[in-house]
Image 1 (spheres, helix red, strand yellow):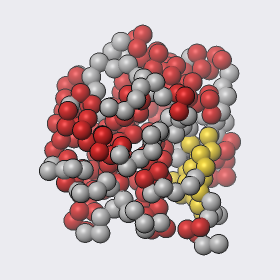
Image 2 (tube, rainbow, N blue to C red):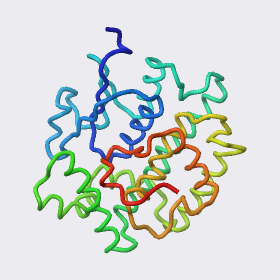
Image 3 (cartoon, rainbow, N blue to C red):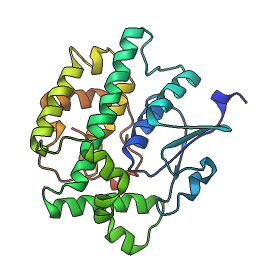
Image 4 (cartoon, helix red, strand yellow):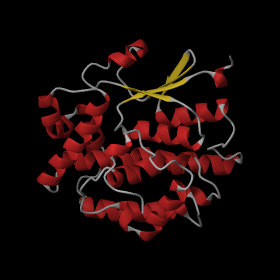
Length: 256
């Protein structure tokens, strides 16, 4: 059995934004894989890596980490339905936009978890996340109950948020990200002006859509911008009805 024919396992919490990216790579390429939920209290499932970082992708007897690097690895092993352009200039642009997803889009999710605009909404959002995690790896009731406060104080999340410009309001931050998103879209129809979805689109899509699909309550969203909403519909047409790593029954809203 070649490496490309080996079984694929994705180890992660089902709500990790980085794992959601990898899930979209796999689903776009129509690769069969098994999601191995990682218990956040013990990380026992990834003990073989001697680290606590998720996601981890294992293909056969090899494993790697770092969501963006996993996209490159998948393209090497499974070149059908490529997610990176052949042209070096286009490729560099796609990877640059993916860095923007990692450095700008994902931290905004964490900021909303740390900086509560509406405490009631933030607590409810945290409970929805704990339900999804506990559905995969059952957690004690008191852990689920305290999840919103645990996320708010988690060192990794706090560190990510501290790197942001916190003098910028969340409303202004959302408006800026909408503008930057449209700039990255260019002439479209996909990010970087590409004619087919790439790693950049598949990285950004679950970050933009997961909160909507899971019924998160927020004041402003990137999807409020009609150009972003139209882009999301185009990307969704290349993915299964459920593009996330949580089961169908936990999706509260439908696509646009």
